[in-house]
Image (spheres, rainbow, N blue to C red):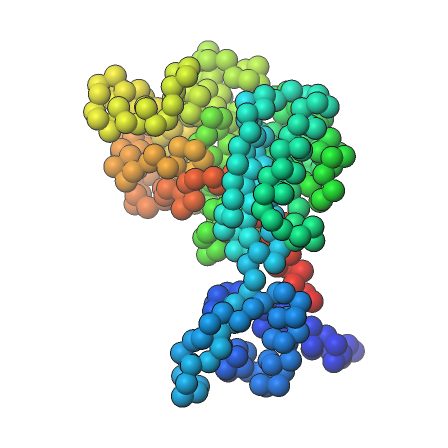
Length: 378
């Protein structure tokens, strides 16, 4: 026997429908809400008044509507009603970005703090985060949480580092940060974080292989709009697929891994910046063109191997994405065509739609998504 829906459940559902309608459309009239959601005007009015009093939404000027002969009051959500902070932990610095409920950047900052597995380091990082939070001029209840993007594999509950050879942080607990921060905190793998950003700006994205081409190589498999973590938490760790058994030494202790061939660390020389490198590539300086061509050749080998295993779209993201152009994709397709046994359309490679700050922003987004999901259930 089916359970009947209670009046309170109907009320909560109507509230959720109205909030998410406003969120999706950004600026709407009461008449638009009533018509599109098939809700009575009194129901819409009561919910708008309640949510406005709670600070969830606000009047936002006026808007033309086909349902009345004059301009109607427009409503929008209060985008900074709740915010989240993303933190990216790197070897020599810490990056911080605050985002609103649309995932839009509100502010960002960076601090030069060299990583070390020490209480003094964690305290210094947290002091910088709190200083950054205070600069946002927000109330205590507005901050949903703080996400830490790590160059490491993370436990399913996002509270512990399972494998962190790059920073020697294996076993690190989120408690090292929460002892100084009175907010919910969680870790996220940096490649997963970048993929989360990609899905945020491309909500239609269902299946893809995301390549994070940053100082180190990373990846994430997106399936049905979710990131697959795998049985043991190390799904998509393509950086340790061995391409050249006698190649350069990888941080994992083996030689010739994809990370030694397809990362920015492999592309750039010591102290060389991506800006300088690509300025010379675009200026067609022979030595830099040769190095770029060699890198694309190695990337083609990696992509071809992965594409043979998983026939889906490949997104080229990470720090490198902002420097990529369509002619680079054309060159990459050409190299892949020489390797693959299949003559298929050149339609599976694309450049990230969020090439800048994707890792740091992505670390903040799970808290925003959780808030929106919870609001949908209220």
